[in-house]
Length: 146
Image (cartoon, rainbow, N blue to C red; front, top):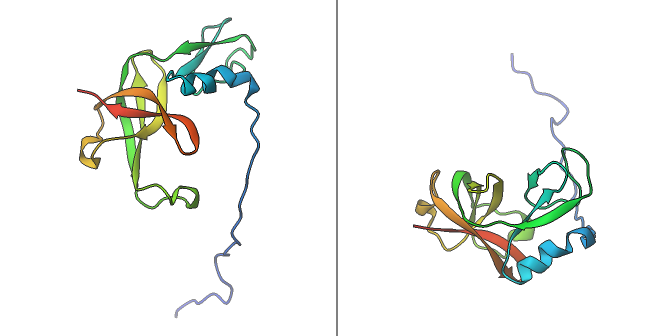
């Protein structure tokens, strides 16, 4: 006996589009840093918690006493993925890779890997985090080193 449900087991939604206005005044130094070729993390002045991307308030002690610190040095890819089927908002970009790298400073950063062949992006690969200019505005990305 074959069971055939008379009701569909899934629903198809209508396309939905969202646009958000995200206040960035407290993180102005981060965005200005990207414009000037620097990448910043935030560090809590009370508990020294280091956060990337920067936050206006500490997620550990909830202090608003944050400072921007330069993310210097290199890192190592811990995990990555190649994005072949891109979301609608990224259809104008060719397929790309994103990676999470542990930086020498100890923080983990999620960023695009640019100027690399897919076969070069691998766990253990050395990367450098850098500010980049894109059509969407200032951003940051990894480049492979070594």
